Image (cartoon, rainbow, N blue to C red):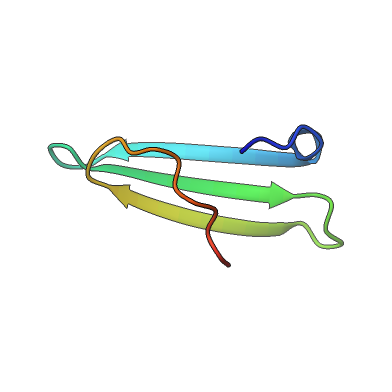
Length: 59
């Protein structure tokens, strides 16, 4: 799910921390500069195994 237009107006900072055996914690901070006030969304994913791209989250 890649928006070519959004890639120029958004910065995404991703931090991946490997906690336990096969547990990966991915924290994604997305800053959208198209909004009047640069809104920041923080999504934390805790996944046991490598899965396909999850369906777009309803927020």
